Amino acid sequence: MTPPAASDASALPAALPTRSTAEWRALDAAHALHPFTDYKALAAEGSRIITRADGVYLWDSEGTRILDGMAGLWCVNAGYGRRELVDAAARQMTALPYYNLFFKTATPPAIELARKLVELTPAGLNHVFFTNSGSEANDTVIRMVRQYWALEDQPERRVIIGRHNGYHGSTVAATAMGGMGAMRRQGGLPLPDFEHIREPNRLRYGPDQSPEDFGRAAAGWLEEAIQAIGPGRVAAFIGEPIQGAGGLIVPPPGYWAEIQRICANHGILLIADEVICGFGRTGRWFGSQTFDIRPDIMTLAKGLSSGYLPIAAVMVGDRVSRTLIDKGGEFIHGFTYSGHPTACAVALENISILEREGLVDRVREDIGPFLMERLEGLRDHPLVGEVRGKGLMAGVELIRDKDQHSFFAPVGRVGTRCRDHCFSNNVVIRAVEDTMVMAPPLIITRDQIETMVDTLARALDRTQRDLPRLMSS
Image (tube, rainbow, N blue to C red):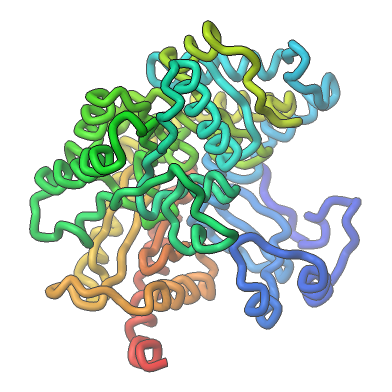
């Protein structure tokens, strides 16, 4: 990685004009609509303008260095400033900047990336459908699953079961399949034929049960849903190995084994959404390997290119692909940029970096356990109800009363205040309702983890001091 330039202006590409922070903010407020944003609140506060990055750090337009404890949005696994990825993009753009996979056409980067993904993912996932984002990948899954059952002469199998607080993207169909309540209440959702069960959150739903007993009980909610819907109508179950945007929910022991058994018993397709968990985040290449899940379909994105270019993929198991190939006609679905050659070239080089630097093993054997060890030291804080995580994804849930298992209301106000204290100390830690979530680049050092956790500890103290005013407002 290349050290950042000393001057903020010199870090900007030559094609961009040099402006003051105030000018950038004014232009942003005048013209940009941001994702997942309260526009009125943002206009009053103004955006923080990020101008460059290197390693695990960002720099804003004022020259302030910020430790990125969220790897962008769970995606910059290899870290910022990777010249190898820039060079891979330049080489491919020089040779073939773009062509599509329509019209019985293929390109070498897409072919090689498909081969590599088949090599890395669990056995039996031998075909790849490329998309540009996790949302698109999960949209593709919906159409693919329903096409599969139609070709199997069971078109009535249309219902896909997800989980409350499951996140599968923000397109209309992916939002309907997901279980994020606030998202599903906007835009005329929900759509029909999507159902949801409770997520395996032991702190909320089974604090007095052993992890093993709760795991079996939580998986049993799927069986109950199948019986209520009708086994002959259920097409698939989808879940993230670890729920990320839904609050960093780590499944208890035995949960995924029982989910697998229930799906197999009813002939239901099992879909693993690996958009967040994939490419080393849990200490294995994929969360499915961490929890011994054998999915029929797996969706990938984010860490596939470490966020350097948009690319995603649907890994399709033999059960589904054989039906699509042998019984199907045209699969009338795709995207202009599916298998974009430059994005595929960058993804291949990104995977090469993860392999040759041993970053996946490092997460499992060293830096992941160190993060959890340091976070365990926060467990006795009055605000901390639970510390949970795996590899380099962790959550610290804030709770009103540990003994009574009572939670803050309204949800999210306390977590947001803690997040803001972290931000003001130049560490990005996300608040998911009242859970503080961390997922830093896989290259993070022990010293940088110390900084991140120490900042969170101070933010917890400041948040506790703010509680009387927060609860009374």
